[in-house]
Image 1 (cartoon, rainbow, N blue to C red):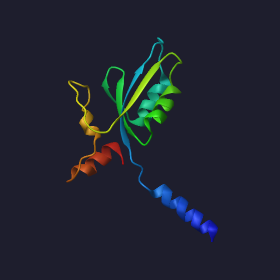
Image 2: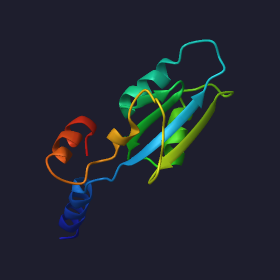
Image 3: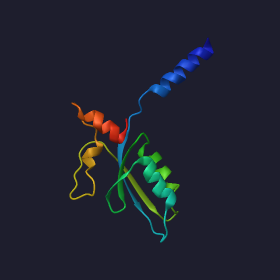
Length: 119
């Protein structure tokens, strides 16, 4: 009986939707070489560039967890800043529209948004 309860509880946890958070992060690199692990992490995160060395991504990670994950792909002298965006923001001539990363509130738009960005 106890095993059935544990299995049910574990299955219920796996099926819960995980809330994603919008993060903007800056990585300042000092070495004059490529960073293939960092580039791979950007692809995994589906990060979009906003400006030079500034990206945005939706993830279930906290800002610290994202910073730690990025840190593993960079050199010791490189710098990282991760900010969770939760409300107001403004930009001018950014390479991508940060507003596209916020889920729409209603109508048919949420279906299209989820197709592009996931849950």
